[in-house]
Every structure is written in structure tokens, then in C-alpha cells.
View 1 (cartoon, rainbow, N blue to C red):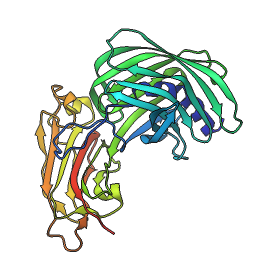
View 2: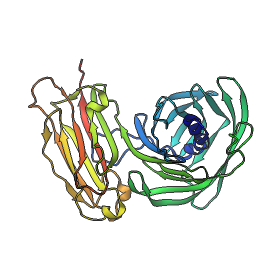
View 3: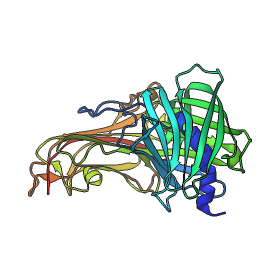
View 4: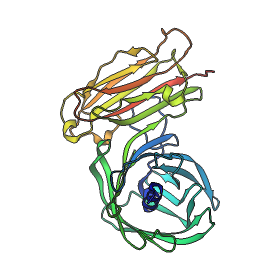
Length: 380
């Protein structure tokens, strides 16, 4: 079977369950870098790693790519792209976020291939009590664009909230304050893929209030999805103040973690004459190591185009970015720079950056979370 077809078969049931927990509340911009991690925004990009049968582990992204109006109601389009060979491909989920715990799902589309449109939108709540079964019956019509053929189908989703506050290992470290959902998805009708039609598919989902979906498993199909990081460039091309942020993992022998105004805008348009506030938080990704006072084996740099600002890491028992982890016995390491670069010769436009490189002797991964607040100026 071609890889693209296999991805489509596996993605179909996953697309039904993703809307349950792929999102988090709308975030806000902050002039103060010393605030918790903001939730998913229209400029956020989540990096995901898919677990497929065999050795395949393609990476992909989830992001908002626009809006779709269906039956007079407007939904945001969240694109899930999990095919690195063809990054333009993917499915677009139509969702309206109503509040932190409530959203309405209308269906999804694989552009140029097919669409699945619900007969009526379905609203799902994530703040229900633990241990109470919920059932959602999703009746829809699947349309293949090339042939124009339309077929009816139904997805019956039965789930229960196992825990409202679970600690779970994820692709970017141990996370606390995670909601755990367990259930089944059963696809029925003419539109259901023959491979899974009528078979209850076990599903396990772990949802973080800020990050959204951080881990998902469908054991029967041997498929899963893990969040590996998240970044947000805000509005890096419009003159005025802007905030950029990123969370990810520095692996032994791996690539450096980097948050840069230039990477976001493709221009040297950060004002050298206005202070940039830059904050970095580090924590061992491993739960046991995070409870030690061992300094992270990394080299951090707060810099401009060529120069750098002096700084040092300071340990703390409290997390600024991830307060849900406070009280777990973890040690967090911080560096803060509040500087301009007025002494740099040349144009007023420069870049600000935070980099974290693994040391040669590193044996345990380190999670890095960073934020830069700076002024964007117009440049040619």
C-alpha cells in the first residue's frame, strides 16, 4: 500500500477524535515576559510526531490556516499536516472555540481530495466530571471531490474522563496537570473505511490546558500522536511591539534550541535602540532528573546578529511558564536579559535570539521554554 494511502486510512479515525482535545484556550500577548505560557493562538504552530505501524514516525504540524463558513456559521480551520514528504497535504478541521473548555466541531476536509461535513455541528465539553461516560454520535456526509460521489457515515464516540490532573511522559518531557480521556470510536455507514468499519477503536487522549493535545494512542491500529514542541511568532512584520515564544527539547547530540526574531520575520527588523526582554526557562525533561539540583548540561546564549549579552542561570523551585508543575519537587533554571544593542554600528534593525546547545557530555534531555518581547521597526 502506498504510504500516502496508508496515512489517509489511519488519519480518518484520528481526525474524528482530534477535535476532542487538539485545542486549548485563546492566548494573549504580554509585554511582561514573566507570565505563564499562553494557550493556542491563530499564530501558534504545534509540532507533532506520529507513531505509525512499522518504523515510521513522521513529524508534522498543527496550525490555524484560515476560516470556513458552513451553513452560515464560521469556523476556524486547523490544519493537521503529518506527511513530511508532502507538507502541503493534510486535513483541515473546522472548529469554533467557545471558551476554555467548550468547542464546536463541524467536520474536516482534505483539500483537493475529500470532505466530511456533519449534518449538524457538535459541541463537546472537556470540563465534565471524572468517571462519567459521554456519547457523541457524529452523522456526516463524505464527498470525494474527483468523482463527486457523496456517501453517508456515522462516528459514534464513547469516552470518559479518567483523570483531571495526571502526570504523563510526553515527547517533550514529563507534564503535570494533564487531563486523561479514554474511550472508543466506531465508524459506520458507506463512508467508513473498510479496514475499520464497525470496529470499536480504543482511544487514549492526554490533554494539557495550555498545549492542548500532548499525546494520543489508538492501540488497535498501532497509531499514535505526540506533541514535540510549540512556537509562536506573533506578528513579526508589523511595526510596534511583538512577542515570540517557543518550547521544545534539547536532546543529547541533537540540534540546538533557537528562538530568533530573524527566524520569525526573515528580516533584521528588531529595534536595537529599544530594550528587548528575553526569558529562558530550562528543566530536565525526565521526571527523576528534574527533581535534582543538577545544572542542565547546556550552553545558552542571549544574542544579537553577532554579539551576545552576559547572563547566568539561576535555580528556582517555581516555574513561571508552567505553574501547573509547581509543587512537584522540580528544579527550574532561569536566565533573564533586558537589554538593547545601541552600540552596534549600522542600521537600527537587528535581531535578538536565545539559543541553547547541548554539551558534549549531555546524557539527559532538557526542556527549554523561551519568550522574547521586542519592538519591530519598518525596514526595506
